[in-house]
Figure 1 (cartoon, rainbow, N blue to C red):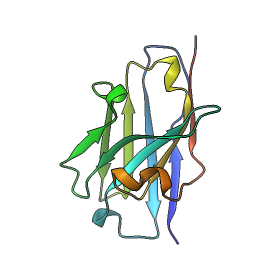
Figure 2: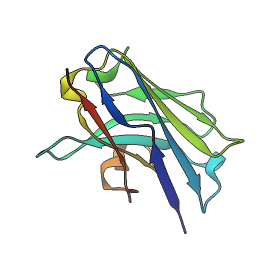
Figure 3: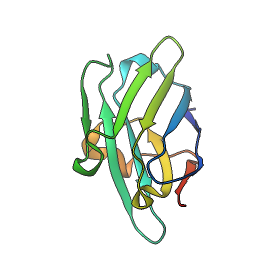
Figure 4: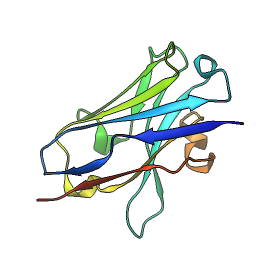
Length: 119
């Protein structure tokens, strides 16, 4: 059974940083592209970023470029999202998914981690 457990969310002031983690189990993590998606209050799912199985290719939604960094540690079966220069509009529940970019918003999700950016 695929399990994805996100952590690292919280309340942060605008301009601050957070690092999200996603512990993966139930599948061969190193063989799959992984993505982050998010859902803001009252809105649909939004793709955030994708990393390939080897970790040497990454892609981001335009509004996250230069502020967010996706990475992975295949030895630890863990996916990360470093978020810098956070804005109030980044407030959302963030989910990691076992998926490439184009199916990320339709992939099965875990419980997610809440990120709130507010002063």
